[in-house]
Amino acid sequence: MNVELLSRLRCPVSRQVLDWEPNASGMVAEGSMDSGWLVSADGLQRYPVHRGIPRFVPASNYADNFGMQWNKFRQTQLDSHSGHSISADRFWKATGWRPEDIKGKWVLDIGCGSGRFAEVALSAGAIVVALDYSSAVDACLENLRSYKNLHVVQGDVYALPFLPESFDFVYSLGVLQHTPDVGKAFRALPPMVAPGGLLCVDYYWRRIRTLLNPKYVLRPVTKRMSQRRLFSLLEAHVPRLLRVSQVLGKVPVVGRGLQRFVPVVDYTGIYPLDGLQLKEWALLDTFDMLAPAYDKPQTPRRVRAWFDAAGFRDVEVFHEGHLVARGRKPV
Image 1 (cartoon, one colour):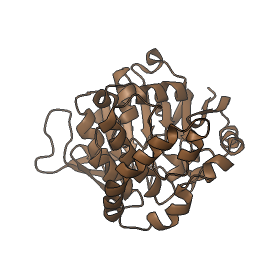
Image 2 (tube, helix red, strand yellow):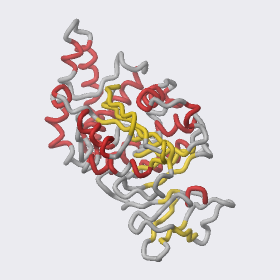
Image 3 (cartoon, one colour):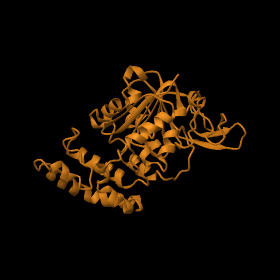
Image 4 (tube, helix red, strand yellow):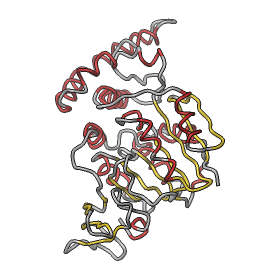
């Protein structure tokens, strides 16, 4: 953390400015704040800063499964690790932004995970504040610490610790459907967008095809399991399920339909991954679909209504792998 980020932080409880209180060895370099406390102006609220990350949430919370998966699969979905532009392609197609649009601009990543999309924005020269509710922030920092334009914050989407209208661009991809109240989570984002700024979010699409996914039969059990037990079970069975899915995928005409009944995420023929990568992505995303406490697909009408209620202009809602919605805040 540094003073540049501190100027944009606010107490999520009182909305007051925050003062820096270092530990005995909290200053590791001039202008850098590695270990200490952020204290509200009235002195009533204190938040730890550990490893340079301000932490505004309890150490354990409903997003623990995401912290576990992103620390275990820290680099799996980074384009710099996979050697493919999978994350970049999704980011630019969903947002509709261009690298030159965000260069030098403040960008807020809500639900950064291990930093797959933050890496894309950072590479384009954006100043990125990457926020996550879970301990995935540690994986994000470890992955992207070489970028001087990165700031990492552990915080709650329902109580964002930022000065309103601080960001020219805000995005949240693959995240909001995993929160307890999706509408409330969305409504927290428009106040963070600067006048004339852009917001992009995506969701699972609530439609019959989505609701027929076998995960919704399994999730009432799997979301209540110990995450380590669930992961161990998947580690043992995902390779076999992936092979079954790959065989079914070769059946003429109906193969893709048959694959939907196999409870495994299979990117064969979708992404240009090699055999080992296919297994790793299958394990990661199968855990991702079975472990979260919340999984709430949305309809196009509902997400458009949220943007309209926030007063956004040029709103677009479309399908690009996920149900994507984006718009511009009036000046």
